[in-house]
Image (cartoon, rainbow, N blue to C red; front, side):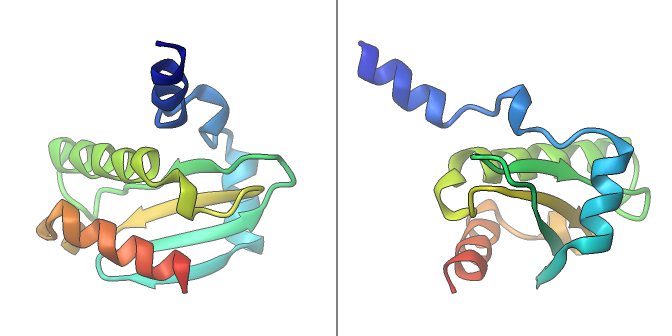
Length: 118
């Protein structure tokens, strides 16, 4: 039973893994490098922590509140289930575009894996 708890904990999305605060987002935007994927831009910057943190910037260009919230839910799920591919010690800001919601979850996942394993 302990192993199950540990494996579930690995796939959780804890508070420490959330990128919060305007100053952190500004730092990532200014110092990060950009990875362009279909429907998504990922900005990656070093944070010198033993884990990576996720930030999401879903603006009104995507659509109404329901579409923005769906995009954020999908991004959080992509991050949570694929933590192993992201480099430790980095902050990630995901910026979805309007086309992001047109892709299937498996397509988004395969694009993400290709981008970070290359």
